[in-house]
Length: 275
Image (cartoon, rainbow, N blue to C red; front, side):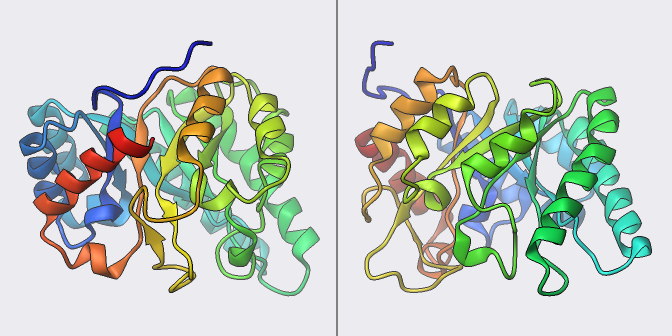
């Protein structure tokens, strides 16, 4: 595939966590002002606004929803807790369908005890229970592997190889993977695993890895402020068949504290420069 520099923002999506202080309404209105065509929604922001009103705001603004975050968090200590998590995931699927998002991002969850292998089995079992329902609603499940530093708190799925191994058990119309550069840039198998995911990449998220890393959760940088080879990774996911929206997803208090319109302006500039 011939690679060309990004010359427009037609694939750019604001993952609304990047402007965390904004309500959903403010994020929608800010995206319209900035001519950003896509938005990625978070369930807690949707809940604050209300599902029907969130759908109306996005639809009336002419925005497209690249994904809903998040489902997952499957492992739990008891059968009852695991059943409750499946029920919540079904609600997440319903919300994604209502919002017009065909991808529900799965942050798969940590182990409830020291048995990380058992927790990974719980993740597989949870996805197996959820996938048929999601398919019936027209929603695909995107497994997002998280950096190993999050294994104890957020997800026991930590490499793209793990995510691929689970996704390959299903049709690409049911389950795929989400490539977030912050979580996978370090992986020696990254490019072979991206190729392995051909036809199954359901999302591509960008930010940067700041050195020194200021905070494990809140230390993501704006594109160009760190060490990730963003353009090479973009080329790889495109070679693997992905041509969908590119979400900017940044957890960083200093960025959250800036005026949202400034953040979106910088985001657009860096997207074209570095992605």
